[in-house]
Image (cartoon, rainbow over all chains, first blue to last red; front, side, top):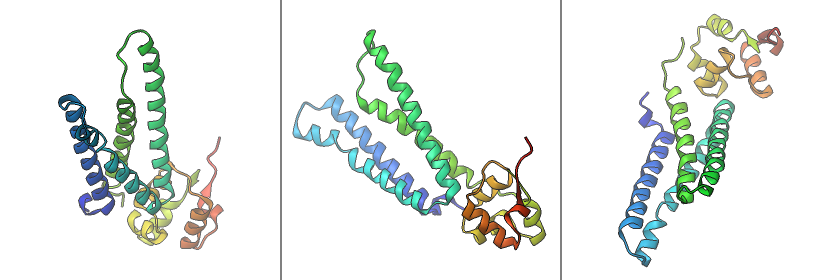
Length: 131
Length: 65
């Protein structure tokens, strides 16, 4: 079955595409625009697609069976652990002179781990089944 | 936990997908149970037993320690 026919896959891909497009817009605004209401608006633009990602995830979670819910919770836990380790380590690195990083980098690390695990789960669902 | 799901499913001539459809779960769930990577909840275990007209103990058994 074509994974793109799955409404959850389409929802996930669209929300991810929207988020990363707005993330690029945010980055561009931070780097190239002077402080202004436009810069503020563009900097905040990833928030709505971020909320859409959460909405798609909740929609998908409620339609899942117990095993898929278990895998989703494992992915969320793994992402939380990676984020915790990353923030722990970097908090000390900042004390010894590493540049201060925005929370954007922290959240993106956690998101990246979670999205990777979710894509892997979805692709596993499209493997050739055992007869 | 060990289970006889592959054997029971083969007797019925069902694929994993067909069994999953009857149980209203995903094929991944059936695969994970059969390969002993996941232990079903009590409600799902009862549903599996009902499908095959057996008791839970006839299908699932603890793994020898």
